[in-house]
Length: 163
Image 1 (cartoon, rainbow, N blue to C red):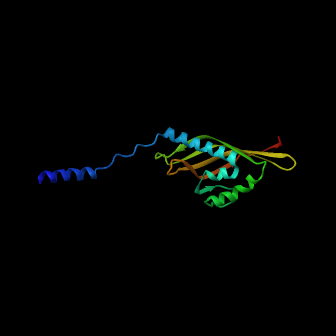
Image 2: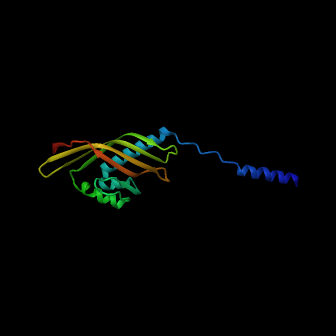
Image 3: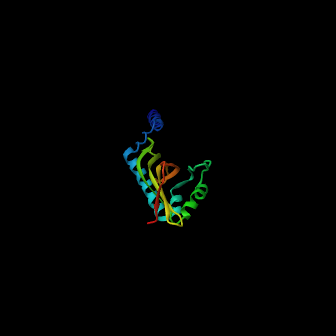
C-alpha cells in the first residue's frame, strides 16, 4: 500500500509540473512568410481586382481612408474600394520592403511602397505613389490575413498619357 501511495504521489507531482514552454517561432521565417503573404496579396489583386483585394482581409479588417471614420469589416472595405476597381484604367501595384513580427509569431506588419494609375476619357493619366503599412494576423490554418491597411501618398502625383 505504501508503494502504491508513493507511486500516486510521484504521478500527481509529475502531472502538476509545468509543461515545457512552446518553442518560439523563427523570427526570420515569420518575416519571410509575411513578405510572401503581402506579395501574394499584390498578385491576387493584380489578377482578380476587387475580389483579390478583399480575399486578403480578416472579416474584421480595417482599411484607413481619408476623411472616413474607421469602420471594420469586408462590406466597408468593399464600399471604399469598389469605385476605384470599377475604373478599367485603374491599376494598383505595391511592393513590400520589410516585415516585422511579434515574438509569438502570430501578429506582424509589412511596410512598402505603392503606385496607382488611372486615365480619364481624354487619355490623360495620373500616377500616384506612396508608402503603406499593413498589419497581419496569423489564422488558425497558418495563413495570414490583413487586420489593418493604411498608407499615404507622396507629395506630388505625376501626370502621364495613356500607353
